Length: 272
Ligand SMILES: Nc1ncnc2c1ncn2[C@@H]1O[C@H](COP(=O)(O)OP(=O)(O)OP(=O)(O)O)[C@@H](O)[C@H]1O
Ligand SMILES: [Mg+2]
Image 1 (cartoon, rainbow, N blue to C red):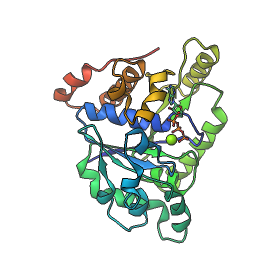
Image 2: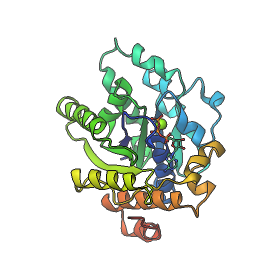
Image 3: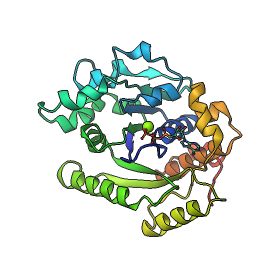
Image 4: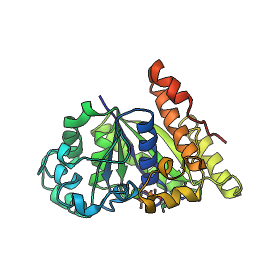
């Protein structure tokens, strides 16, 4: 059965989509069948994976959420063998409003995913930068969540808001959800503010921050325009190494089998 991980932070531009796409690609290389759910009407994950929006205008996550089609019909293959995507586009904005009057509106994604749980090892959900109904659906469906956080400004206030929302969801809807980890992104070791932010976050959330820091890396910002995850765009880049390292951290924590470990042990480990 798939493990479902939501990547969420209501702050915009912190690396949620970049991390979803590139972690997904690295898990796929580790021979884990992986599905990315784009739950953001911006539809950035599909673009970053080189898909043409016009091909899924009538069949995407929106149609699955409102119950028009089974989610399987909305899933498309990507360039990587083990990586599939359930894309979105801007009609997903309407879902928040259309679902308001529906029963169990915060459980639509969870219900839709039941059909594909046995087809994947990992399902990653790319959330939009708000804490609305779509994000609540993601947190309700997820086993765990990752909070990407740009090491650029002191982010504590936004983070405590997010953790409060999750506390509410835990209390009312999904008592078993747990924090997979806080992921420091856009880290620049030459920048003192970055170092300060990373060390404050690490000490404040001791034990909950991934050892892997994602560096600020120009290749990571270039690859979406080429429609490729970083490992297909520049496998030698620091961005590639970092996302391999993150995948390894997660796989090792999930106790992958010995057979898998020999492949995964070849993945680099990037810590600071
Ligand atoms: N480690 C990195 N190094 C350099 N650029 C990065 C890095 N991570 C992300 N970016 C760039 O920063 C911008 C924001 O990243 P991304 O889209 O992943 O954030 P997001 O949290 O998904 O944003 P939104 O909240 O709008 O969905 C993008 O242009 C992306 O290419
Ligand atoms: Mg995004």
